[in-house]
Amino acid sequence: MMIEAKLKWTEGMQFVARAEDRPAIVIDNKEEGSGPGPMQLVLIGVAGCTAMDVIHIMRKKRANVSDFEVNIRGERAENHPRRFVKIQIEYVLYGTGIKRTDVEQAISLSENKYCSAIASLNAEFDHSYRIVEARADTQEA
Image: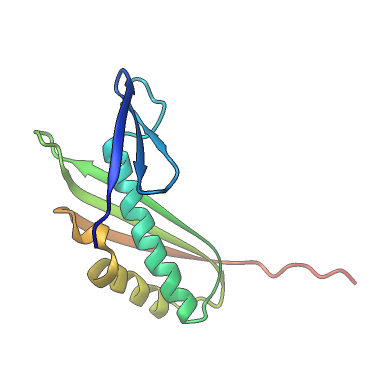
């Protein structure tokens, strides 16, 4: 499967990017700040890839996940090409009766089998997760 993307320079260090027929996004450097930078997009891509895997697996397990977040941090090398050397991912699942074993299996399958973004990077990956038990809604009498 081939994926195509196109970048067009607009001004300064700002570019408009479009992947195939998807909506365009602005890419910029830290100083101008009109959009995320390329390395920030790499982290966003990793987070999105593993998030889709985990939520898909949790749905298959019929887990009662009401909300879900992925927090990601990347440590870059000091010298060029300043690649990511370590990436930390925190998965936060909200819901009721979510089983730790299901979460652990979903994360493991994503990180070790399904997430092509993780497999594409030469970085050390570390993860943690939290399950936030949703409070039962108070019922009106």
